[in-house]
Image 1 (cartoon, helix red, strand yellow):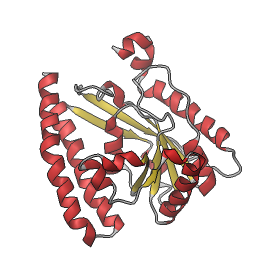
Image 2 (tube, rainbow, N blue to C red):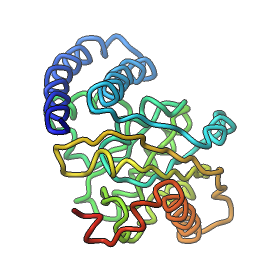
Image 3 (cartoon, rainbow, N blue to C red):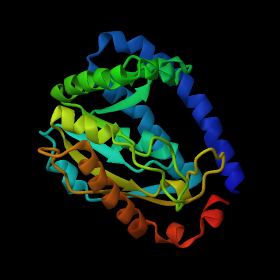
Image 4 (cartoon, rainbow, N blue to C red):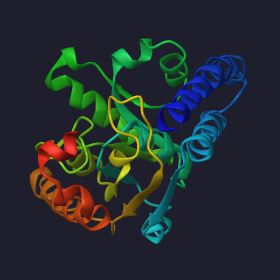
Length: 253
């Protein structure tokens, strides 16, 4: 049954995404950046709805009040990253327009990348080396001034549920320090139900836990990054204790 549900969901995405992207190409020239984001958000809601209806993947949010208290502040969200689910769901669920920081190569992915290129995001060219961060900081400062929030995944890649974590990269914290933004840490238990690099989607409820805002004022990027890592990893063990009771070999199976 899980395979059949996952297959139906994949077919749903194949049918939904190309025409939605084409609609973006048609209407975006006549829209402001904020309206473009709201239009794209519709696709994200449709995917979340289908994940629940077809695959049985629901969600719950804890700590939403922490975001509500920061609606008029510049914010960098630093989140655990276990699957593609959160990259889709956050766009729909976060109360402000979101700005992802991503490598420029994604702009060339058919449909998804093309539509992404028409939104105001922060894209970097890794070949530029140290200059890449300066470009990201410049774009990030502008996006924050326009009222968007920036989201980054400090682990740098998706990690399996319960496995030993990779080192948290300090780029997101550094961006917050450079721009004077607040940081909101986030934990998410998506890996158990929407595993990375897996076709199968498993029914269950994903928990998103939103932490209290952390000021970047008078802090180094390393100190701020350590605060985020400590909270996120402790919170992961609270919201998904079953994954952390398993051995790495069991969690990878």
